[in-house]
Length: 406
Image 1 (cartoon, one colour):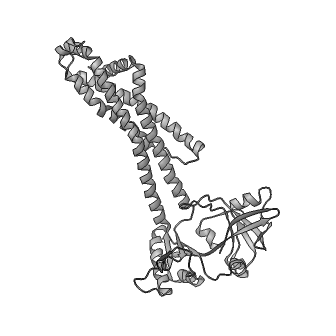
Image 2 (image 1 turned 180 degrees about the vertical axis):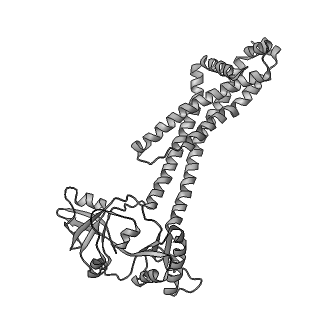
Image 3 (image 1 turned 90 degrees about the vertical axis):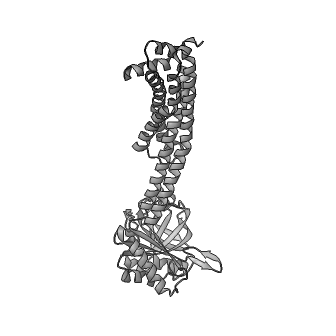
């Protein structure tokens, strides 16, 4: 019996019980669709996190103040007055792998413009900060080192601040008030979106010269953080090591004692986030794969019922010359056909659900060809695996006993 004839016979057999065949395929349809949708959701989340990390800047390291135990209490980055501007100058001077370094001091404040006000984050820094973060302006210009030296009252605002304070007004040239001080808005930054990790809105910020913030608002003479850009991606780890050695030496930290600073490499953060995303994707796809397994069990169950119902038919086929291989191939083809048709519908359903997820739930998705191909191959494999036992059982029936079966 040739393959095409076997397929035609399988289709006719399945068509005789359309409702039963449809319900049997439903398990495969749901299983394949769920696998594709869950993998797309997990992959989309991974890509979204990587985009958020990439938005932080390239070849970047974060140096924060504080990171050690004192009296049994863990002090995190930013909680100690251990970073000074002289440390930044030393990094630029003594660390060969460092290309740029920008200081940072932050505080929170209500900002007023006209009759509107908005609570936001105020960050004091220098112009090279925007180069390190690869953060262009969509309007206006940044402040300069001359403005830093003069402690000028000028500000560059993020997109979220612009939307909340200047929804109907061009912010360039306007004056805002921060803690009873007037600031002249000179630039608007392009949108960055949420950051990875805590999910903070990177656009909800106002940048001012660091000297202005330190002298006129916070009164502090230490740095909360330093953003560093290495000369290349390959040199980020060299820069990390050089900065750690330099700061331990400058802060006179003895061997064996913990650092009073934090140096984080963006490449490490990206790798850890990608690994976590991969685990989540595998977990989601494994959960969805359970329904595909249940669908396969349904195929085996229906095929066993079909063998019992068609025992006399099997006996007649064997009596007129059909071999065990012919009978086995016929029932196996029916199981595979059920699985392939169900898998095809499941792929379409999975892609449709994946496309709808961003509109319904707002989650990022990424439908990969690998996931679709894997789901299709797995559904066919389910048909072969769960259809083999019923097909083998049908092939081993005794023709004489089969003809006598009522």
